[in-house]
Length: 283
Image 1 (cartoon, one colour):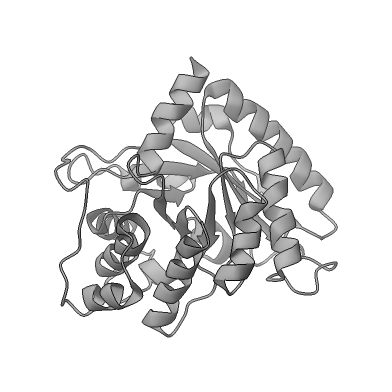
Image 2 (cartoon, rainbow, N blue to C red; image 1 turned 30 degrees about the vertical axis):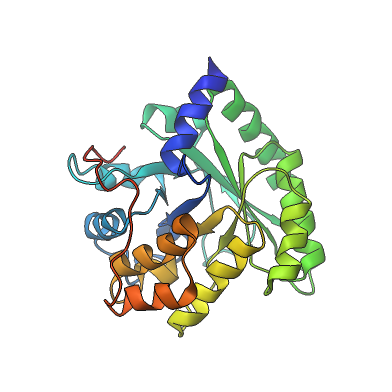
């Protein structure tokens, strides 16, 4: 029954027709406080839901903000780990929620953040193992955000360390793995080829160029990626709804970068295969 439960929940955070997903992480408040784009969470979630995002990521205390009780459906991924920018060890993530608590809060999936190559890696891997076991027990999909970050990492975007991070996520039992984009279709294909579970890309720091965002998204899809998990470049965009539409067009409709740019400019109507749905936001 737990296998069936996981399959049902997976379809709430991933497009069942394409096998791809557009996730918008909104868990930044614990790390850096109430940044622009996330000060009014109800409005922020409303915009990305209307844009057609498959799921959002947030911490347990904000689940009520995402429950609108009306409008377009969107999957709920509850983030289990955290650290703050105020800490002496900002790369050391600790568990602040459990899979069982996430189940009680109505989550469709859970996520964990692990940074490799630093002095706290041992503890984070131990937490990863426990969460992976609990997620399997409860039939809960697990999104693992894995980054090579720490004193032993020279270049966190090096394809060798990104490949290692993705493979580690698979071998630890994650159902979806989030890593940084390596910069090209060829190198990111190496990452995807070395991992048999869906791999999505992180959005990274806030970008200044709309085209740069869409080119990164398109490159990851051409490399065989399963979608995106982009935060700041969505919720801090001047119109998050339209940015989600443009990204979704590329991820779930196979659209081009130019078509995505036209959506941003209002010159191309976005396509939403799930437009007819009119059910509640989960959470």
